Structure formats: structure tokens, C-alpha cells
Amino acid sequence: MRETAARLETLAARLLTWGTRVALSFVLVGVVGMLLTGVDPISAPMPAYSLAAIPGDLLALRPEGFLWAGLTLVVALPLGRVIVSGAGFLAAGDRRLALVSVLVLLVIGVSVVAALGLGG
Amino acid sequence: MIAGIVLLAGGAAAGVFGSLLGLGGGILIVPLLTLGFGLPLREAVAVSLVSVIVTSSASAGVYLEKHTANLRLGMVLELFSASGALVGGLIAFLLSEQVLAGLFAALLIWVAVSMVRRTEPAPATDAPAAADPLADASAAPTFTDSLAGPGYRVHALPLGMGGSVVAGLVSALLGVGGGIVKVPTMHLLMGVPLKVATATSNMMIGITATSSAVIYLLRGQIDPYIAGPTALGVFVGAMAGTRIAHRIDTRILRWLFVVVLLYTAVQMGQKALGL
Image (cartoon, rainbow over the protein chains, first blue to last red):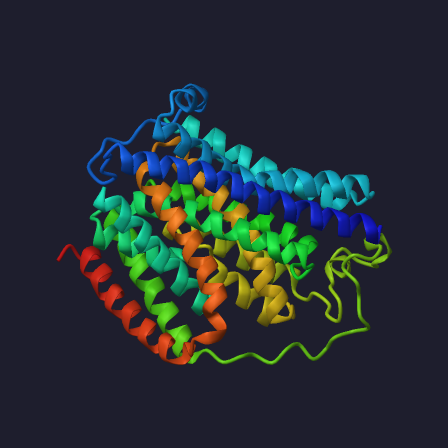
């Protein structure tokens, strides 16, 4: 079990490290695009968030597409870490920690439902 | 264009100071955006939460790779911090900007006082026979025992759970990581060594902030044009801060920072009172 747990921590660590790099690369491209196109972050109207619109915005090289892709990845990364850890705990036969992981994801799920339900 | 560069630079400054002084960037980003750029407090909190997740993910990656963070303990406590953040994220939309500003001013004063009084607490002395967190957890007699780490045992788990709920509430309402509650809770109440408590808190911050960041994101409170440069700046600043930390005398910096915090608290207090 020790080896499994160590591998799990290393896997979670790499997910966070590489995920952050990828996310910030998207953000960097978005920021550069924003500066080059002369978008004033304070006065420009806030682009609406739509997960479905991100691929189209990326293909059209719109700065907001890169920004939203990066920021979405940023918010999703800790969830990825919990999923990886939960799966690892389950594989290692630690059902209590696997259950804790599921409960954490459930809390995030409630956050999503609450945000949407309250008029998103 | 200038505003974008100023946001990048402001984020970087918050990242450097936060990293040098052991604070998350949130405590500086929210005042920077509200007092410096006139952003509504709720939007500033939302942007700050994104920056907090970035720095948490980056540093948690390092701590997990080095096995400094206690993953098992962190996952148990983050269930409670995430729950607190969920509630806080919803309450934040019910509170007025003035109330939030008042709460933030109180937080700033608390942090300033903590920095003045800060001493390195002695490590827990009741270390039992070294328990390895990576060893067979199923062999531990109780669930709490299964959360132990090398050379320390975890105490007062219910208190830790309560402290984590409070940390989540503070994080979601004020856009900070909540480490200011989590680290003392783990270290002073639960007997976790300071280094492990700091690393574990850092890891937990990601999920804590995500619980409420999701609410802010889906309710249209995160402006990517502001969050992008700020988060990028904070990340770069935090990385730079860790590299220069050993070359800087943080005692003088800490006192300077206390003055800045108190000045900002006054500004936030005036905002709360509508002055």
C-alpha cells in the first residue's frame, strides 16, 4: 500500500504541476491577445461565460476563448486532483478515503447546482 | 492596455509579498482591485479566488511531489472547508458590499495583529512512535490514527473539522485562501507540525476556493479580462518570491507590510461606513 500511496501523491502532484502550466499558457496567450487587440480590462464589457463557446472562440483566436479555457482549467484542476486521489484510494482498498473524495466532489456538485438554480 | 499591464504588475507584487510573508495573494488582491481599480468587492473576491487556486495548485504540486503535505488529512479536512466555502459563496450574494468591506477590514486587522505577534511555535512534543502516512492505513486502530504522519499523531479531529468550515466561509466571503485559519487549527489544535500544516493547508486551498469559485463563475462574477492578467501576475510573483526569499530580511518587510495592512484596513473600513 505504501508504494501505491506514494505513486498516488506523485501522480496528483504531476497533474497539478502540468495542469497549472497548461492552464497558465492559455491565460498567457489570452492576456497577450487582449493587450495586442487593445482591450481595456476595466472598461471592456465582460464576455459571458459559456463552456460550449470556448472551442469556437479558440479556433477564432479570440482572446476571451483562451482566457476562459485557462480559467476553466484552473478551477477544474483541484477537482482533477480529488478524482485522481479518490481513484487511487479505491484502488488501494482504502474505502473511507475514497468515500471522502466522493463527498468532496458532491459538495462541488451542490455548488454548481446551487449556482445554476439561483439564476446563474 | 495600460490597465492590463498594471493588473499584471499588481498581481505580481501581491504574489511576491504573499510568498515572502507566507500569506496567500488574496489578502492583497482584493484591496488592489477594489481600492485601486474601483471594482465591486464581490467581483474582486471572485478574481482573487481564481488567483488563490493558481498559487495553491502550483505549490501543492511541489509539496505532494516531496511528500510534505499530508494528503489523507488534507482530504478529510477539505470536505469541511469546501462545505464552508459552499455556504460562504451563497451567503456572499446576500450580503451588501458594505458588510463585506467591513468583514474584510476586520480580516486585515486580524492578519496585521497576527504578524506583529508571530513567533515560531514549538513543534508538537508528544510525537508517538513514528507513523508513516504512506504505510498501511487499514492497520490504524481508529480513523483519526490513520491520518497520522511521520513522528506525529493527529488530535482533536472534530475541532479541525470545525476550523475548516470557518476557513471555507472566510475564503468564500473574502476571496482569501483561508490558510490563516487552517494552519493554526492544524498546528496548534491538532498537533500537526508547522511545515506539514502549511503544506497541507496549501493543498486544501485549491478545493476550498474551487467550491465558491464555481458559484462566482456560473453567476457571471468572474471577469476574464481582469482575472487573466491578475492570476498570471500572482503566479509569476509567487514563483519569484520563493526564489528570492532567502536573500531578503523579512523582519523589516513584515513591519512595512503591517503598516500597509492597517492603512488598507482603514480604507476598507471607510468603504464599509460609506465615507
